[in-house]
Amino acid sequence: MLKRIVLLAVTGVSLYLVAPSLIELFSSAPRVAKLDPVWLVLMIAVEGASLATVWVLQQICLDGAAWRPVILSQLAGNAVAKVAPGGGAAGGALQYRMLVESGIPSGTTASGLTAANLLTFATLLALPVLTVPGFLAGLPVDRGLVRAALLGAGVFVALAGVGGVLLSSDRALAAVGRIAQSARNIVLRRRPRLVGLPCRLVRERDRALRVVGANARQALLASVLRWLLDYCALLLALAAVGAEPRPSLVLLAFTGAQLLALIPVTPGGLGFVEAGLAGLLALAGVNAADAALATLAYRLVSYWLPLPAGGVAVVLHRRTV
Image (cartoon, rainbow, N blue to C red; front, side, top):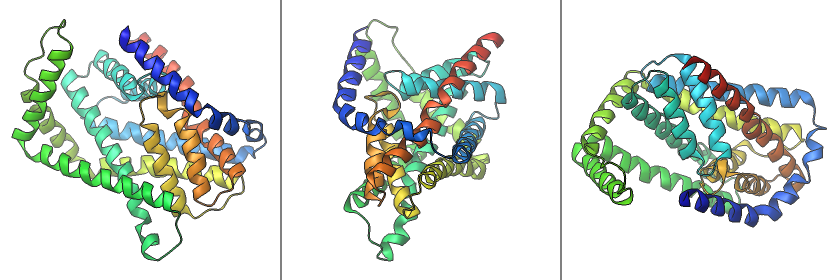
């Protein structure tokens, strides 16, 4: 109960801090209804395709699990991650439980979801690399976007280094497991002690490497398409409002906004993404009014529309377990 109260308090304070920006942003909401419906249909189709690539990636990482539990659990987990305090952790826990209830072994589920999430995150951080040719060509780029690109590249290099060590060294991964196991047992003293985590991590890492390694090309392609299709939805939103910024600058703004979505203080980065993306698009050369309108249209199809699908997925899952 204390944890939930703290999460709700942090979420409330965070939303209060970004409230002025949100109020100004949402003042453009009536204009979204006046956009050409063709653009909105195209955005929904592209976002649907982006969602389908997530299912493909998770199905690969879950060792060829049945499509129904993969799709239903992802839709439900994605919806919970967007509305519940704790965001991704809450959504991941729900998806894990639904997959296990569907008959997928717990070890396979844990390692598969971890592999899929890590690959997706690494691909996101690598996206700014696509804008490097523009920098080298001397095209003018706002310093704020340059800092965002350098931050993403730095985090990507750091995670790639740490990930490489953990993937290749049993000793390093076991050490991480021992630290995590000790911390968990200290914090949750009233629960049964956790044992065997280091060996389990090594075992599940090896299993994930075998599964993903055999389908590495398909998994990487699905991960890249997941973000590129989402990025295309943002480009369509900008086209719908008549803005024509350089796609490379929009890509930097898009990457920065997706990193803001990972901030766990509000569900799905609510508030931070809207304010951040509108500001980053302004840095990319879009005027403030068009940036706000494009941001609202993009978030409508990427954030709000998938929520009802998550509720339907939970109902369908309960009917089959």
